[in-house]
Image 1 (cartoon, rainbow, N blue to C red):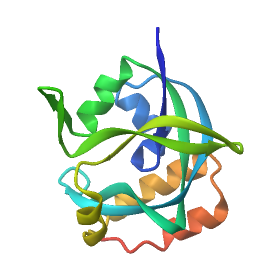
Image 2: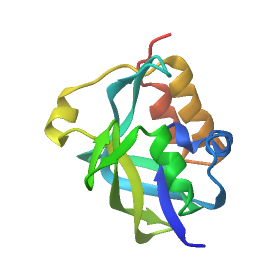
Image 3: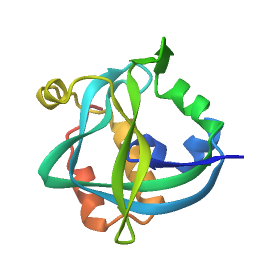
Length: 161
């Protein structure tokens, strides 16, 4: 069975959420994405607020986790991330993208999901995440032992009750 390295930075940091979504995590490693920032450019009915995305920003960094998962699990992730494929083109809320992340000081190109809008459009849009969604990210960050200063930055993100 083939395996995939997947970088999670939003609510998928929660291991129980990954299990609930039918994703079998074989291994997890802390990872960092320098010169990117977390933002919330699209609304999710299910979460009741903005949901996470990453965009380039030379003054910021995103922390997350790289999961080793079975390739078959990608179908489940596609479903929950709202990714649709038609005639070889990606539609829906998120699309797959390969990005280089730093794992224990070594660079590795891994799969992640990003909002399916142009970067310029994403940089201009910001929706507040719901309190429940932001708390889910923070709980996942703690579960994986992400840096305390990064967790403090997450706590300062304005959110809707």
